Image 1 (cartoon, rainbow, N blue to C red):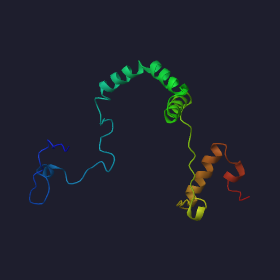
Image 2 (image 1 turned 135 degrees about the horizontal axis):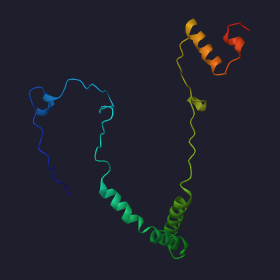
Image 3 (image 1 turned 90 degrees about the vertical axis):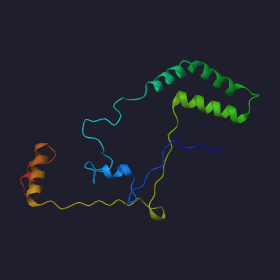
Image 4 (image 1 turned 180 degrees about the vertical axis):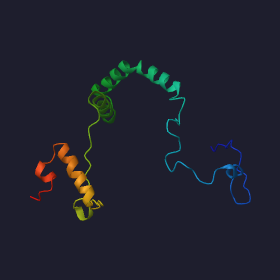
Length: 149
């Protein structure tokens, strides 16, 4: 059965845009994926309180649910698929779901190609890097002084 939409149809204007589109700024200032100003929340009210209430009610039935799963898993008259499903649910809750290995390979099964663009350091940048490494104790003093050995 199809349901009717309660939304009013959009009214198009000359340029084919919706009426309220004319009031929008021409360009967004924050860029894609960053619609909010720093310190501004997209969800100032937080999570809905009803969700917490539903979780709390469900948590009250945890012992009964585990007991029911255990009874199904042990019942030889239960369908095999129900027993396996109940056993898996019990194991997942007790030990967590097992990790799944993901194999990644490049073309023809070879290694995954990784491209990195690294610009060469200028003489001043190289000297600064050597100085910092020396200060951190990551470089022998003679290399930092540029002995060339």
